[in-house]
Image (cartoon, rainbow, N blue to C red; front, side, top):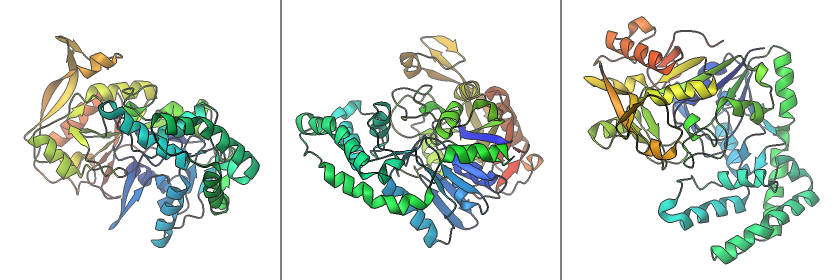
Length: 427
């Protein structure tokens, strides 16, 4: 009953798509358990590059069943567009399963997201404007629309009316926007019903039966640990739980069924959007990391903020997720630096702090304490084993492993599916 959770151990964008795709050929199901189309994965297969937003990366692996779990919020137009794009490229998407309990991102959720961010001005969170937060808010407020509601027009109409009773008041009286018509929203949502019907399933039952039948199930998180609504750098976070616990609630499996938790770490650190970032670079090194690493958001298209590796964050991710392994990505990007700084602690109000401060104010004022590690100049993209790496690259990996608190079991040395060094098998 091997059930693996694979998640980001930083602020997202660590290369989860590559890691998931690498395992995809060995697993039977890949389950996306939270987030929406505010997350993106880039997967390179041969000379083909695929940008995935809602779909689990396992959709690119023949024989693997991709699942969108109940914890995901789904924009039907985005999902159908993504499926169409893959079909046009010859990818079989017929095995996709979509939870009937997943919540729908409605047109009014997108509108509320955008106008709220504009209203906040300089205090804005830096959302993607795709309606993710408002949809999760509707879910918690119990006025959300679920996939299964698309198949009962009466219930759907009642739920849209209930949601718009309040939202139209806010849109017209606070934001000076036009009210949204109930029948227009209902008509648009009903139009998606038959197009989505072939994929809709009781995914909780499917996943648990798969585990009972000794199938290998991989649970794939979007975003990253530091963007978790409970455990991230609140309020500059996403609206769901990308941490390991989110896999249980977002897919409907008990914690005793999880056998391994794999954290994805970039060999340096990036984040998109607003919020504190102790190791962020504003110099030539930061620009070089951005350029060499191709650091541009898959979903947002925004340049990522870049900085050196932060071991404090890695240790925190190990703790809150119960990580058993790390997958270190983009080690090749660091080739060419004579020395590579690694943040081993913070200085806050003149004191050295080695663990992530729980206080937002303290974290905002944290200054990185660096340890300098020797770099390397050799091309590592063709390395097939750990011993193929230059000695300094090996030492860098070992240092990160010791600082982070869990073994590094795989290393990405390039963007391609085959440009990975596997040290210990995840299965």
